[in-house]
Image (tube, rainbow, N blue to C red; front, side):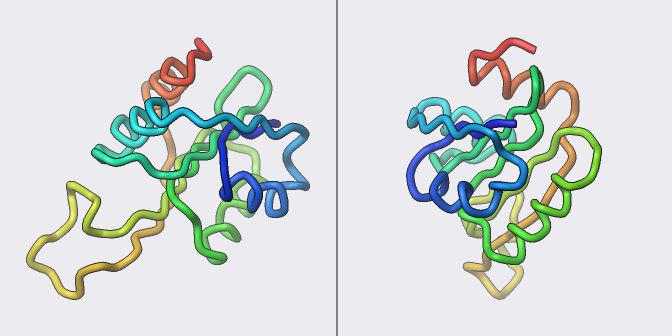
Length: 131
């Protein structure tokens, strides 16, 4: 398995994901990050992205900067066999599907979702890695 990403998030991932990852490819591309944010979370923003590739396929996409708790959940998910997933850590106000009338505002939303085969295909196309 190897990781595509850049910056501080890759440095943290090197520590957190060392049991799972063979190679880290540090590459920064705002256009790719924006397209992945838009496609997977309907975000009109560029957030830090990590993409975990396993063999010829996509294992996970991590959007945002995960908390310690979310990292634990990501590591647990990676230790189990299974399909591709999206983990994200995003401020509530950036999410287009947030509740605008529900207090409190400004919360950090952290979740892990399964990715559909269409999501995986689209993400690989964005990364220019045809499935």
